[in-house]
Image (tube, rainbow, N blue to C red; front, top):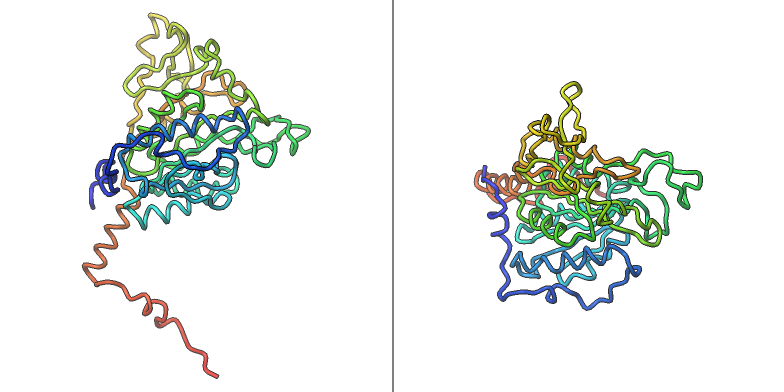
Length: 354
C-alpha cells in the first residue's frame, strides 16, 4: 500500500504559476453577513492563509451546506459549491476521491454539521478522506433566526425553546475523536494568529482534518464565548495546547492539568512544587485518543471556563482516497479496465418484451 503523507498528497495538486496574495482569493461578490459577525474574521483568515499553500486557485474547492457560514464559497475566488443541508461532507468526499488533483475544503456550521448532517460528518471522519472541515460553532441557528442548535447549552431559551432547551449539547471535538478522526483542533474566530496556525497544521495533515471554530453570532447569541475573548478572563479560561509542552495556563501559568490517579480523569490544579512533575505534557501524536478525549471534556458547556484550544490530535493513518486509488490501479492491472455497460446489463438483469 502506498505510504501517504501530506507532501505526497499536496504534490498531486497543481501549483500556482505566480506568487499569490490575499487579494487573489477575494471574489467579486459582496460579503453579506450581519455587521459584526464572526464569519468575517474567519473569511479574512482563510483568504490570507490560502496563498501559503502555493496551489492553483482553479484546483482549490470549497464545499458548503446550508447556514450563514455556508455562504463562504461565494466569497472565495476558487471553485466552490453551495450544496444542500448537512450533505457537504458527502459531496466533498465524492469530489476528493474522484479528483485527487484538488484541495477540497468543507465549510459548515454547528446546525448543518451536527444535526441533519451528523451522519455524513462522522463517516467522513472515520474514513479519513483527504478533506479539511471548518466547523463554525456559534451554538445557535443563525440563518433561520435564532433557534437552539445541537451545541446550545441545556436551558438555552430561544425561539424554539421558550422554556429552555432540554437537549444535552454535542461537544464537536469529543464527537470527532469518537469517530476516529485523525486530526482534530479547536480555535476562536477573533484570534487571527491562532486560527491561521491551526489552518496551517490542518492543511499539512494527510486525511481528514476537522477544526471547530468558536464563532460569535452577535445578533442571536452574542457574547457566547466572551470568557474566551476578553483579555483578562481568557488568561484564566483558555488552555492553549502545544505539542510537547506542559498543559499549563493562567496569567502566571499557575494552573495545570493532571491525571487523577484514582479515576484516571483529568483535572485542573494549582501548580505547586509538589505537583509540578505531574503536570501533563501534551502529546497530539499519541496513538490512543484517550487523553485527547479527556482534554475535550474539561470545558464546562455552560461557562466555558477552562477551555482547551489548539490541536487535540494529529496522527497518521491510511487515507481513504489513496487506498481507493491503489485498489483501482490493482484492479486494472489484474483485470483490465472495467466495462460499465456490461456491469449494468449483467446476469442479474432481464429484458421485458411486448
